[in-house]
Image: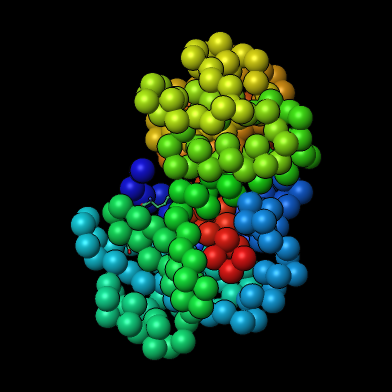
Length: 268
Ligand code: 2YG
């Protein structure tokens, strides 16, 4: 799991509207719609939940400590979806206590190992990796105008890649998986095809999920002309030339889709 740094999120809060316009242009869906698709809830239910739940985001100082702007950006993404969200004054347990006492029933918090959304009313807890994978699966489906019956290659079968693959199977897509780690390849489900050679696979699949922590391993000549890429992996797997050529068909962000889908899953 890649740990974000302050620079990965600096200034993104101000650009959330522009980000959402781009997302809409590429997928035909706004952030809440992508989150609802990934979270298997309706926009109507999300709107209802926004009237009934308040959200607290708690800064956690353990391990490598607080990431500048992280909790504020998480809260602004949640507000973008129509919910009331605040970052607690206090951090850690004191922050959790503050959030609960202020009657927030959804708590977001992240240390260096886990980033979760906890629903205190239903006791449902959602992991960021799970939300991110499903959300980017839904975004790719939006960009492709549906993936039922289509072949999708998932690169990287960690928590994000495996939940993206799960979402894609649910959507009726034919899922193939490549992971450089053989043990991970063994974890793929029976109805998923294993692709042993990445370069060969990139030449045949038009729909890709890049769920690896590797950067810049994909060049323009590796990809098909029709390629569409949803890339939750940080850093981006496309190199600069590939990004330049395919940027209108690439979805990549450090937190927006993952946090939005966590919220949809937490209230669903
Ligand atoms: O409260 C804080 O500011 C810090 N304790 C947050 C630490 C977050 C560490 N995790 C990550 O940076 C990422 N796993 C977050 C998810 C990125 C998904 N693309």
